[in-house]
Image (cartoon, rainbow, N blue to C red; front, side, top):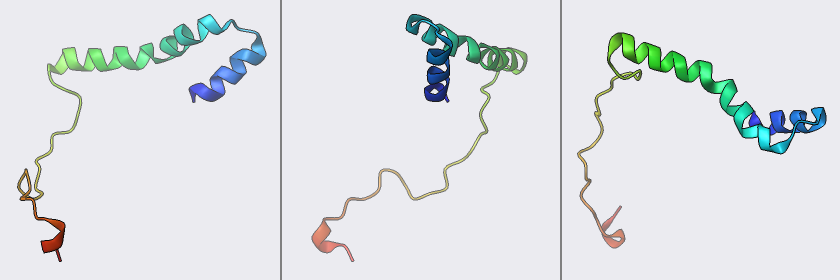
Length: 67
């Protein structure tokens, strides 16, 4: 989205030095929401998951011995 926003800012005549602050300002509400949720619940805002795949690290088999 920033790519298309930058072309719009250029069309509007906004100075290039202001692009980064504008991009950051547009994200502050999302960053603030994440901080507030984390402070309220005191936990990460990511789903918890258990790995159920093969054991790690997987046993290495030379290419010549693979099927």
